Image 1: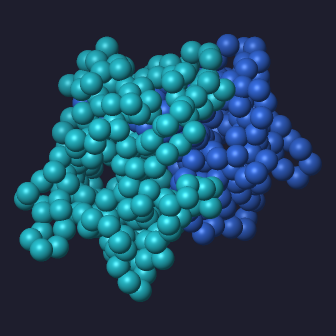
Image 2: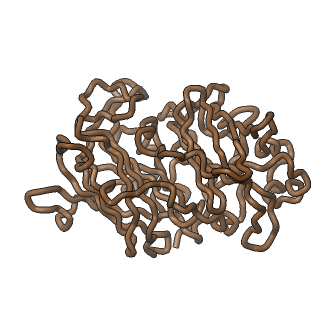
Image 3: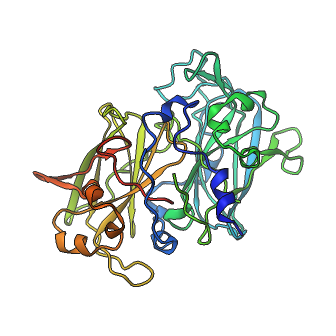
Length: 231
Length: 160
């Protein structure tokens, strides 16, 4: 069970001036609290409109050739805050290529694009709540937040879950990355235990011999017993 | 422990949009909603993503170079909250952007539902001076619903 005080400190605040983009975008008024059951009564969407093909879960097979970089398999379970698997829910991922460059035209980092890598994937969790993506390890990249700022390697995740209250967009990081300590996006989470929840574990069990390194990362969505988060 | 949130960042535009994402309603009495996502200085947020969901409808729209978004949806029927209290027709709106470490959740109410809006238990919990931020405006053939992240006209957001 989640106790209200604990859940609050694991979440980042809206305003975190070290991450400069929060300054003009964080709401300044307290969020309005509604009874939790009202929120969780807003059922999640039907995903029929978002195309999910089985090949969308392998980001290394979306082009004629194989992308450059360290091939990895990232897998884990999507659970609710009571530990129950969240079945058949949509998981979306996106990331930079091995050189630290996104396909997105907004990205102007002078690192090469990889013609064999887009960096976007989708899958549905199975009946035990498992997801699995095959990809390449994303590179670190610079950004303009502060002098000599670099984002640690990360994969963006978007997960729906059963209702409006379970919606989650977050980022998964890699163990041992020295850039994590100076990343204001990650360090906006005050409690180091919260940061740990965003770092995958290297995993021998899902490492495929002569093929791909395995990383394991479980995702816990806010369930019906979770307390809504304030400002 | 729930997994903490992190920002959607600026580089999701190649990944999250999908064909027809902003227009779940085809034919019938489809309703077009247009709006702008604005920051604390009134500047357009050009790298935001809005999601609308209510009942079976789900729509997603990335903001453009003017911070503008649009949705074509069916006006939802009123839905009772789980304790049976009737609520006015509304759409749940989630807002994601670079600089939002957690997404925001708000609601869009309809301007032609004055009586239902006046009795709505969610609007009743909102400071009367700020309720108007949750009600779309009729603007010719479309409904207009701007989202102000911060400032004097700040939109009401709900804890989630």
